[in-house]
Length: 66
Image 1 (cartoon, rainbow, N blue to C red):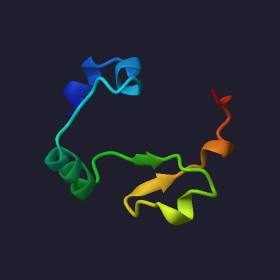
Image 2 (tube, rainbow, N blue to C red):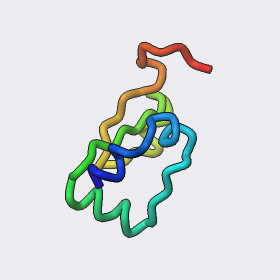
Image 3 (cartoon, rainbow, N blue to C red):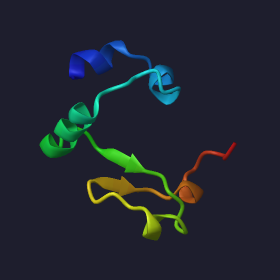
Image 4 (tube, one colour):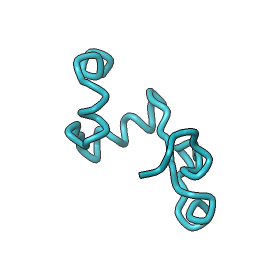
């Protein structure tokens, strides 16, 4: 996985050009090999949260929203 990610540009990840299977995602979560970020807002998070992800509410990010 590290070799694959090293070859990828961040922009490709941000644009959704990197695709993995549901099984691949499950393995990543089970192995805790990455930190998954959940950017649901503070209002959304109580209704849709992921126990395997770190929630950082979008409204608290330091970057301007589009």
